[in-house]
Length: 351
Length: 51
Image 1 (cartoon, rainbow over the protein chains, first blue to last red):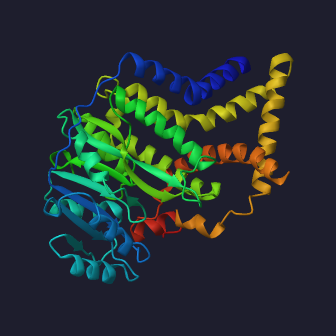
Image 2 (image 1 turned 45 degrees about the vertical axis):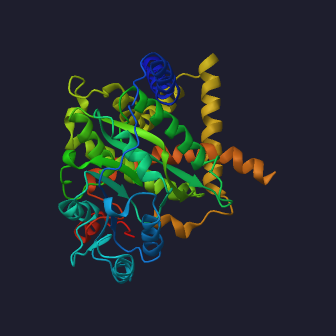
């Protein structure tokens, strides 16, 4: 019994982190589907939902105004969720200086959450394409063009851009969280070239307006729910590395933990909202969804099963694995007990 | 030396923490919503910090 549990758990862990990426490499080489990209200029509504973003709102809106896209085809919608700081005043002052025809500010006296703020914006969006963005990140000047070029392909319904995490030197982060993010992006690129990515980057993604539906109240991961709805309607969700949004890398694993916890909680929520994702005959990216999204949810249980079953198997090879696990968890405890000096606990609650 | 120790410990620590996040995510999902964009009612339910 313990042997069966040990090997099943180990196989699951190895598949999620190494087997699935290898499968993607092979699949990508054998069954790559091209995207008929072409530069085009559809009308675009850029939606930014905000709560308390006084520190970011000016720079964010200036960044939107600096985008390389015809101003008469770019509608920027700032949907405010009852901010309690100066966000609304600053947003309105920006809208006045840049022109109310370019920036539309929607306010709500009652907190309703991000999903409600997005729904209000969608009700007034007029563009053929809706681009979603967050307040903190900045777009590359050509980001919107890079997104819309993919939508020239009629089989594509949504496009995820690339979030570039920069370190304190302004270079793309390459260790810790940055390294993990690079691994994640390489998976997404291969998944997009096979069919679709199982989720977009919340900081930058675009969807054909005709495919959008209002979000259910309290939705945690709009950037996964919306692309998955698009995919279930028969369209592809692709990844465009040239459509870049920039953010600062979070050096503290604890800050990343809070974001990760919310993301993984959103994955559970997604299963209740779109249970058809679990049906192979309804979900064209069933293998990718199960391997990428559900696999990550299963790994902690497999890790626990591996350790517990290993305690009953303490001979030969199993003893070596048990020693390896003890060392690994010992180092993890040391990492917890002695955090890096540049870790900023105050940033942990701002994720 | 400190740098090497940091490198050695941070990967296992981050890996365990990220997997713990999956368990915590399930807990929060079962218990109620959490996150920086929740309405005040959801905030009371989860008791988590909003930003």
